[in-house]
Image (tube, rainbow, N blue to C red; front, top):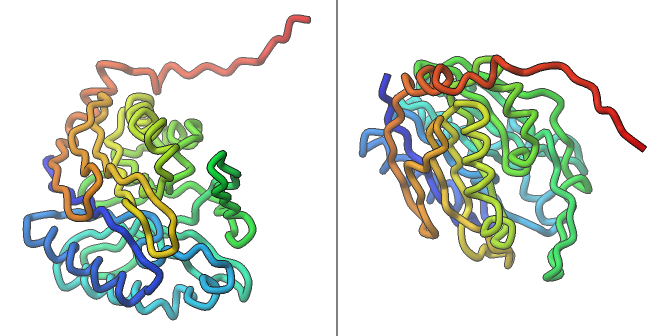
Length: 275
């Protein structure tokens, strides 16, 4: 099966309505160019670093106007829509970084709350503490689609290879890795990690990304990537906002796993320490 996929690269700001307007335009463009499955980055309709502001601007899933608009858009355009994540309020002072897979009838096929939270102090003075505001997810998520089995992950999850192997062993054909990688870590690790996850799993890896300097002052790396099951980068959006189209040949998943059958060679083992 051949499927046409679009990766939407964004520079999301701190106004959810304006961000959703921009996102809708790119989704319409992608569908008009033949995309059957469209993927957007992490925090697609709100990039806000201030704790008080983000709690004021975020909505519950039931009340999120942007999500409702995107569901209606998927149904109108008859496309499958992967929203990399939205900031969703789950309590007065707690949020979830939640991804959505929306079917072509507008229904939510799958939800995924980011499992691994990014807590770090960078040498340049930037500090990120996702755990101060966000509640980590508890489950990995797979969804059956007309294009095969799709697995949902988000950004920092990329650094935990055991998650991706579990998803592949459970039947994933395509793994989503929407992100808002920092420039420093992106330059050092983004391409390498995405290629490694594809090679290790024999899956297509699709990573729609945020790019550029955002309204709150944060800068993100861009380079939305599509990587095939052999680890070859087949699309790279570089640093610009916009739509990147790529065709996936799903037969390559099975072909690659026959050529390199490492998923079936896992062995249980202990660790012996020699004093």
